[in-house]
Amino acid sequence: MDDAVSVRDLVVERGRRRVLQGISCAVPRGTVTGLLGPSGSGKTTLMRAIVGVQRVSAGTVTVLGRPAGAADLRRRVGYLTQAPSVYADLTVRENARYFAALHGRDHAHADQTVADVGLAGAAGQLVGNLSGGQRSRASLACALVGDPELVVLDEPTVGQDPVLRADLWARFHAMAAAGTTLLVSSHVMDEAGRCDRLLLIRDGRLVADDTPAAVRASTGVTDLEEAFLRLIKASEQEASS
Amino acid sequence: MNPRILAATTGRILRQLRHDRRTVALLIVVPTVLLALVYFMYVDQPTPRGQPTVFDRVALIMLGFFPFIIMFLVTSIAMLRERTTGTLERLLTTPLAKLDLLFGYGIAFGLAGVVQATVASAVAYWVFDLTTAGSIGLVIMIAAINAVLAVALGLFCSAFARTEFQAVQFMPVVVAPQLLLCGLFVPRGEMAGWLQAVSDVLPLSYAVEALQEVGAHADPTATMWRDVAIVAAAAVAALVLAAATLRRRSG
Image (cartoon, rainbow over all chains, first blue to last red):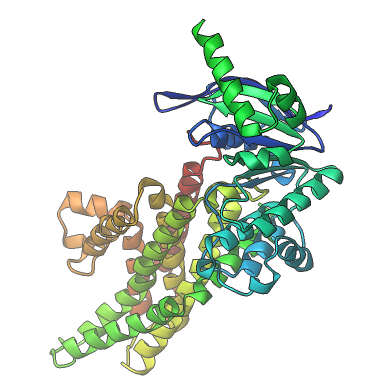
C-alpha cells in the first residue's frame, strides 16, 4: 500500500454544477503533494472528498486503505479548512488544547504544536484579536495537534510572511520525512516547486499528476507557471480535437 | 460517547463563556432586575384571602422561564456560530461523537442555567420575600431541567437557521406559545379544548405545573416528579432530534 490517498473516477456535483468531473489521482505516502489550480477549480471540493465531509456523486476515494470518511480515519487524518475554523473567543492555547484533547493528547503536546507553528508568543491571545496570518496558523496547529498520518491542508500559507512561509514548508518536509503524508493546496505557483509531487486541476479535471522536475521536462520550460500554462493549452487542444 | 472528549468539550464551551464577561454579567443581573420590576408592579395589589400573592405566583414561574429563554437563545447562536465558522465541520472530522458535542452543550449551558437560577432564586426568596410551600432547592432543580430542555431545543432549531437574524426569530416561535399556554395567564383547565390539547404537548406546561406544585405543597408531590420526568424526557428527545440534524457529509 504505497498510496495514502487513491481517488478513482470521482464525480462531485454541487447544486446543478459538476465541480469534479471524474478525477483519478493518488497521493503517495510520506510525500508533500501539492494540489494546484486556480480559484474555483475544485481543489477544496477534492480535499473535502478526501477528508470525507463531501457528498460524492460517483467514484471512490480510499484513504489509508479505508473508504474516505470511515470512523477510524477521524483520528488518523488532520484537516485544515481554507477559512480558519478555530474559536475566535478562545486563546490560541485553549484552541490547541481542546483539539489535542479530542485526539487524546495532553496540554504539553498542544503547547509544543502552538510553538511549532510560530505562535508561542501569541499563545495567550484570543484568536479573535490575531492577524489573518496568525489566525490561519492557529488553525493549522489545531489540524496538526493530533499527529495525523495524513494531513490535508487547504491553502495553509495564505497571508504568511515569506520567512514564516519558508519555515512552514520546512516543517511540512520534516513531517513527510518522518512518514506523514501531506496534501497541500495552493493557488500560488511559486509554491509548486516546493512539493514532491504536483496535482494540477482546472475546471474539475486533472491536468497534471507528476513531480515538478517531470512537469518541467515534459513541457521544456523551467518556470512552473509557464509549464502549467502549456499543459492547460495542450489539454484544451486535446479536448477540442 | 467518550468521557474525556465530553469533558473537554464542556470545558471548552464554559471557557468561551468565561471570556465573554459581559454575557456572564447579563446572565446573572437581568433576571434579578426583572424580578425587581415584577415585585414593584404588584407590591400594592390586594391579594384575595387564602391565596398566594400575585408576585409569589408570577415570580415562581419566572424563575423557571429565565433559564429557558436565555439558554435557548445562547445555544441557538453558539451552535449557529459553530456551523457558520466551520468549527462544526472540523469537529466532525475529529474523533468527537455527535453526542459528545450535544451533551457538552447541554452540560455547559445547563450549569450556566443553574448559576442563573440560583442567583435569581436567592434574590427572589431573600430580597423580595418570595414564599412557597416547597423548598428553593426544588425550584432550582426545575429551572436547571428547563435550561437543559432549552439547550436541546436550541441545538435542534439552529439547524434550521442560516443567519443570526433567523436564529433569533426562533425564540418567539419556540418560547411565546409555551409562555402563553403554560397556565400562567389562563389556568389550563379553563382553556378551550384544543388549546388545552396544544398545551398538553408543550413541555413547558409541565415545568410550570411542577413549579406550581412546589409553590403549593411542602413536600415534593408525585405530580411534580411526573412533570419533571416529562420535561427531562422532552429534553432527551430534542437532543436526539438535534443529533439527527448533524451530518458529517454535506453537499
